[in-house]
Image 1 (cartoon, helix red, strand yellow):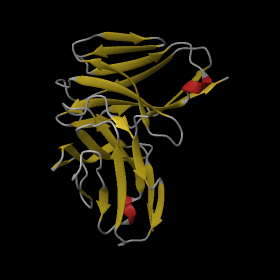
Image 2 (cartoon, rainbow over the protein chains, first blue to last red):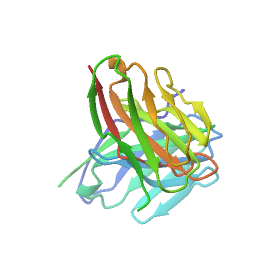
Image 3 (cartoon, rainbow over the protein chains, first blue to last red):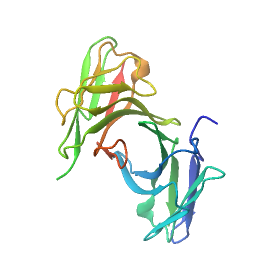
Length: 109
Length: 113
């Protein structure tokens, strides 16, 4: 497909793990990103992964990359209410950055 | 504090009335860009600039203009706004080499009546 695709909603209980999935478009993308957007705020870069890596871990965040399937995922361990936000995956494409539509993560106490 | 600032943060205007949204960064970044965010569509790039006096169209440039006369500023100009330009606009900047690790401004919510 032409678009970066994500499911629109995810709801988890506090303390559980969250997994947000993304399918990107360009197998030659150099970097793949996860951004977080809290209500009324701009986008904050959470983490990124270079395309020659399979996995990257950063504290509670784990990024998995499957280049063959062009699939990217973000796992948040021990999800907290402060993690409630919209999460965007993005790929670099020439001098553009293509974003998915965003996954709204809701964390219930 | 390293940041990207946008002004205004909120704007309501009428069809056809020219407006400018300013964007400024204090990180000496070469690359700057403008996005619009619409529900269910994510962010789409409007224009980008690799450096001073170098600008290029993104995915949705129609109805917009930009200029890059100085490194720190990258204003977005709507010569004749229309209701379909009602959106949330973000400016972003990144260091030399392109769009890696973009820093985003807080956003400008524009309503065109």
